[in-house]
Length: 255
Image: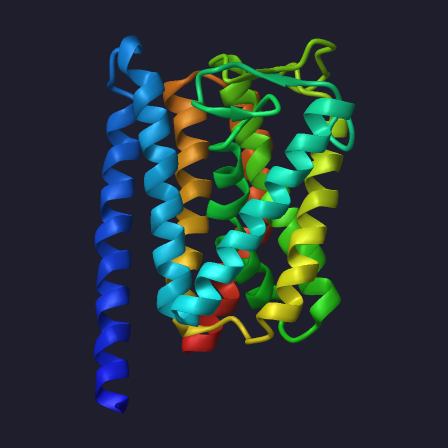
């Protein structure tokens, strides 16, 4: 039984590696695509990133718990989006276009992926920095996930996936959006603190790689490809504030 378990673990880790490599390659290739292919490519990358993150969660936490973690993040995030679109709280007043596919009450089903696919990486980097301090980990994870949105929202709004009628000081995005992300993320990770009390460590290296790659890749793309230096600096600083300490902590752990 133990051998069979180890074999299954190795297969899941191998599957994650293949998916992660495909994700990196597809994101690098994205910048070279013609305009008419960007919408289907965006949907494809969202799906691939969600699959990659789910595979990592299952590899490190087991099939059942891994799926429960990712699924709960997606469900809570989607519920918050439904409230947000209909009431303007907690994110502020915004609306989605039809570019992300089928919608429920004005919210694309794919919106749940934004919460699900970066939750595990955010939880992992927070765990590496916070250690066994549960409340600190929840708040750091919420900050880590919100930091990613500093990259996400300006780019997706610029490309027409959603819009902010009232605008905002940061690339047309209001501060209420990021406050809403932090509040929603805190709720997600409060649930996670009950579902997953394991320390972050070597088994979570895949999630750490996802967070670090996203930080580096988004910073480079906004600075060198999309000519958005403000977003590159803001997002790079926000994600780097948790990515760098997490990488340092992991290196010390391995020493």
